[in-house]
Length: 157
Image (tube, rainbow, N blue to C red; front, side, top):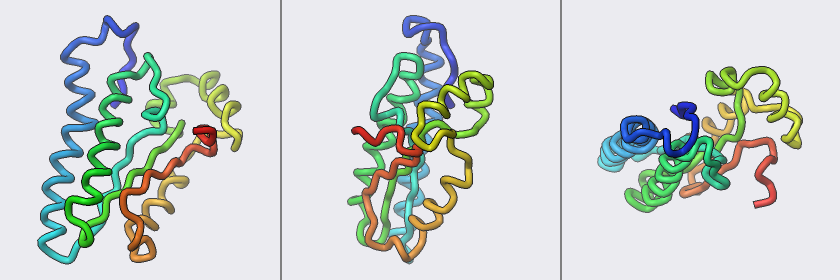
């Protein structure tokens, strides 16, 4: 959830709280509950989806970037909370073909694609394989990873 706002002073406490609740508080509660349950049983893997935008936040989506940055910190802490039974990893997509990007309009989508070395924005299938891998036994030694799925846009970090 990343609502559009006119400028930073126009971000109300209500908007900020809602963005934080959806993007940080909710994943915290779910991760704490699921992680504890997985640790009591056969283990498992938590995969949180954040955004590459946390690495270079912008004033146009600052409450969202702040909440997702909190999710980054949460995931790194969870990587040690129940290890070795429970692993936690972070997937950081760049621009993707979602409801949010559809609201940008065709011109802004084309600009985003042009900036990307892959000359397109991501599609859900670009995330699926990575998430299946991270959840599988093939990734049994991957814990605390932060994986960019951005077509190389943030490669200069």
